[in-house]
Length: 316
Image (cartoon, rainbow, N blue to C red):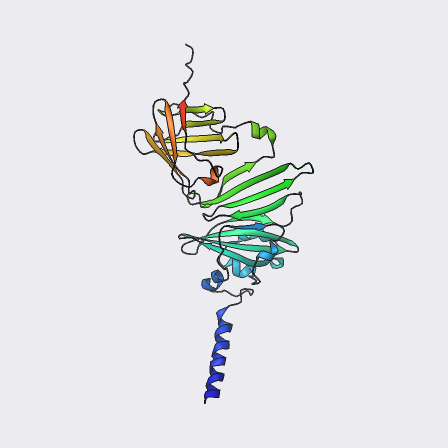
């Protein structure tokens, strides 16, 4: 009897193992639990480079038909093109937040591999997607994607010239709940020397008739502009600063909301940055309360005071 019991237990073990991991490579519908469990948790922060992109995915293959159960055609075909049957899809991992679930997957067609992120809400319904990187760039740059704990997806390209000059461009994407899409919250580059030496104020020409609208300055490289909106309790603003002889810079464009007669706050869904503003008739004081690292250097903060520039009176 003990021998037969052992064989019975062994058969039960084999059956349970075969049912434990469902195949996702066919054309038949699969359970949502099987699909999402194919993506293993990612330990953040993490970085993916174009040179090892294909090796970062799991060996599990997900067919287009199965992926299409959970992600619509419009999002998927941005990665596969029309030849959906010639694309191999492999899970890279997942980032599980309280109300958001991010799935990362590789899409390989011939020798080209693309890395994409797909966002689902807490009910596991698809919301948005974003391409992060490819391994087939031909521009002499090193390409990478870094993901921090928030998460923010920073797409970068870097190169070193023969005379040891370092050039880079970085764009950071984060999910914005109001627009239900990924938005650019970081845009940095030293490629254009003219752009480095010229600070472009994107709201300079907008109306400035309300009480606290105007320009608050320390010098040409450290200032804050405030402009009207249709709501008198909300203002558009643009901040630019350069500290430590240019060693640390910060820049932020957004909308602030008045919370009392002279106090306001910047707080935007999908962005961990929070800034308090205190206005007077002649100045404004900034105090960073949340994590604004996506908009500034590591060792400097949005903690400044600026004097209000007097408006030029129009000649009668």
